[in-house]
Image (tube, helix red, strand yellow):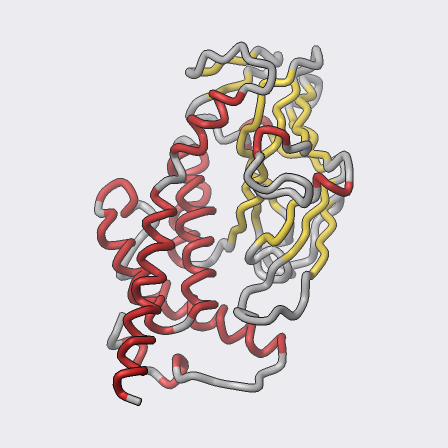
Length: 281
């Protein structure tokens, strides 16, 4: 990757328009993915390799490394760890090649770290074998979602799984396609608010996402820990009788701890470049 970053594409550029800066970050990450030097599967087979990729991209550019960690860690890593063979066959190769771009819909406007209180719902309809994704209030919109404003085809949406009898089984991850693969047109029921210009890292296209009766197939539940049968029967490997199903969510969140190492690796790369530049100056 250090050799790749000698390419003119990675030369620092200043005073760019917002659309130019976002396209540059996209093009840089696409070139990194085309190198095929690492894979989302490395989280299982060779985690040091993908951590090293985060560190190397941190040397190059903050927007690049942030888009990288959302694509491979938050989105790809969640599909890998919380999904099963169906989801892996559908997406992992395209995540590696950047043919399918993803985002991670956990944080809501009204609920930052207090994830178990989040309001987004995924209500199972046994007649059609679909989940109906809804944003019930302004506070429930998914907020500051990286890749969401213009680039993402898919979003992993964390929502309360509601059974046909009204039982709330707590937060689970659902794969939701928010844009057409070819045209990038936003799909019906998905509303995207571009959060626009920021004080830094403007190569990142942050968004607020709102869902109105968006239907996804039953198979789009990331079902490594919980499953819903066609008739609506719910089963989970995590026994949790608490009102908020907090224990069940913590098991899901535990799968994402590798992301902390990814972020630390990115920052390490950025600090190395900052120190080298300062000493050189």
